[in-house]
Length: 315
Ligand code: AQP
Image 1 (cartoon, helix red, strand yellow):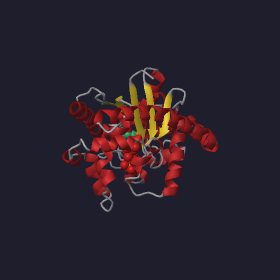
Image 2 (cartoon, helix red, strand yellow):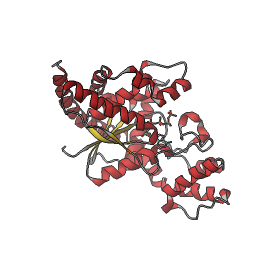
Image 3 (cartoon, helix red, strand yellow):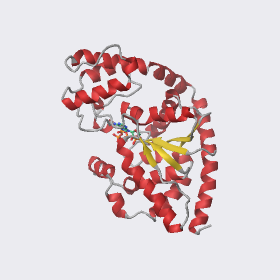
Image 4 (cartoon, protein in one colour):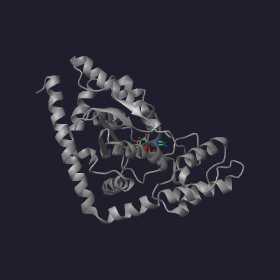
């Protein structure tokens, strides 16, 4: 492992939507297949428990997300695919970064402000410190580039700051200064409220799950708002899947255009849906891949955390 590292993750909180795919996962595949990087793609389960959740359901969501990764084309021969909590060294590094991060920096985080409003009865410490765990996830593997959607840019900037604070305090050049790597579609908007990013928490009709049935694509896109912002968002989606679109994008004929988009997306993800079903039926195969990923990730994590602990004077 001696190429530059790329690290990114997605939370297991339910089905992947078009925003997750166009903002992150699609980019991961291109990066993986370029062969230029050591790739680490993880299932961010520790991040996801900062929200209310059900433990049984969480287990299923983790497994389903692993199937999503594999069905989309992440390849264990080319990338290290693992579950965040299975490599707990990230929490040790997060603690070290806790001691370097001014509280005021975390108070500025827009995702924390949004989520505090959304889950006003559960503003827990994990939600507040979420960007520090994210910094640890990335820097534990010395991730330089971080392929994420627009909403995560502020967190990646904090990751860069953690690297700087650490390097300056301990007078080393240990961590790289991470940078976000955005796609051409870094922010897909909600279908019903296009002033907001597409997000599951807005409600079912706001987002398109990439494994949803073609009928649902037709229904949800059919009901998407046709305001200027809504049309712009549909155009972005249309462009992203252009090679599957059997017709032009015509803003004067949105009913027809929406049918073209729904069919184009359904066709694009047909192969994904079929593969995902197969992976779901072969649980052992998927769990073995995750076990192998854990082993590979942990070998690097343990080596690095030992070096880090030496630098900070506790080992
Ligand atoms: N709308 C989006 N457009 C582009 N990229 C997006 N991402 C998320 N939404 C969009 C990117 O997907 C990756 C995984 O994000 P996450 O694990 O933080 O998931 P999320 O954003 O929390 O997903 P939801 O559905 O929006 O969940 P809720 O509603 O529960 O918060 C990241 O790279 C992110 O930038």
